Amino acid sequence: MNNPLKMVVVLTVISALAALLLAGVYGATKQKIADAERQDFLKGLTTVLPGFDNEPDRDTLTIEGKTLYVGKKGGQAFGYAVESVTAKGYSGNIKILVGVSSEGKVLGVEVISHAETPGLGSKIEDKIWRDSFIGKTAGSNITVKKDGGEIDSFSGATISPRAVCEAVRAAIAVIGKAGGAK
Image (cartoon, rainbow, N blue to C red; front, side, top):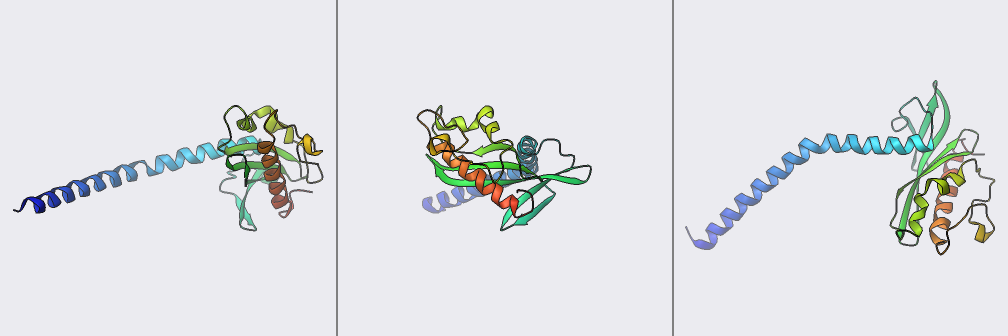
């Protein structure tokens, strides 16, 4: 057997074995990963739709291409949650989950992902700050105080809070089309 041909055969066999091993590991862990991701998402839903007794991640409806997660107690819908993304963060996209009651009041805001500056823009993750949205409605002035609104910003970091305010307003608007925000 020719030396270059031998090397090609050996590399092909090694690559095929590595691919089979990788496929096997993926197949063995795929469901566990999906279950862990679902549990993480349910934790977020618990924050923004407190007290549901259904499976809101499976009890959904679609409005304008957005998935709304329906929170129910005793079979009655009490609120909706929706993911909202804004590209106006200081370091890129900010993705949040917003829950709104059937009466149109914000029940909670959870930050799903962002790339904001640690210790500055990342303060959008602080529970106390996120809780400042609770009770707000479509008629509230959901902008930062620096812009004449009701929401505090952080010293030296106004862009990130502005972006979250925009995402919350967008979420309320989508949920309002489902009859959940007034």
